[in-house]
Length: 364
Image (tube, rainbow, N blue to C red):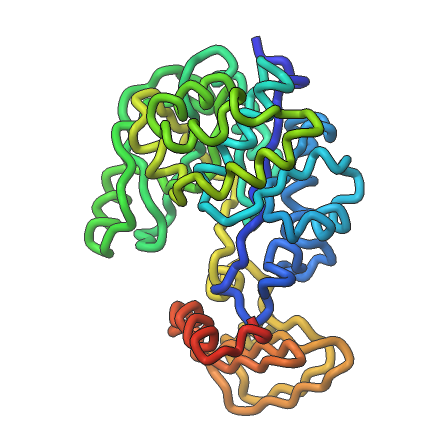
């Protein structure tokens, strides 16, 4: 039987969010920004969402060491030990191993819920129900439970999960995963949608820390070798120095490739709780409330004429006068002004790489 006191939320908040440049920067990534226009950062919204699933003292944030102070600024309720910092960016597998091993040493019965910090959930009550179903199952059964999002369109921007047999029926059934698939082309995504046998891979998953530790030992020995409890004295004064020395030695690999696609005991819960992955400006535009001309604006000091289907961010105290623009991003961040076609926003990450090559790092 699951005990709520053994449920821990792990919020992943270490990325740079380069697709949201120039709002999201190396010094202040998107998880620390009010992207939804509600007066709260994405990190803050994610933290509050988990308070219905586990005790506040069981919410941990995984982030890069340079964001330690920023996390505590946005979440002053946290104790410093609830912010787990990585000294280098080695993708998601090493940081999840680190957190899993640390919390398993702290609580041998720990059940962990891993969530990115940049998701939008419009039905929080349903979200809590699904998380409760997943943690209850993971507490009693060896394996990893992913939260699969019931697809509403043939989206080519997400990986998909092919569902198999029902392992545990109910309002939120637990279904065995047959396969993880890469991002499909449109025709394949349409076939997935029509089959009713696929869900989007949302990057939300649940597991017992003890199970994940043994799984890393078996499936990702190179990561386990550097981060095992025999090497890292977890939850002691020596942990920080040992992590600084050993963590950068781990291979840089995602948890999907290192663990999820290799693990024989993976399950999914198909869910619909108004989920969106805020990965791009277009996804943000889709989720925000629109003006009468279908614009999303983050400023009251705008004079707009013949402007339609645009996303406009102008700093407080600055007047923006725009005329004759349609389907554009206008992002003014004081030192950087981005004016870009909305349907070509996938190029923005490449723009940041080009600027880096030109030595313009101070704008990134």
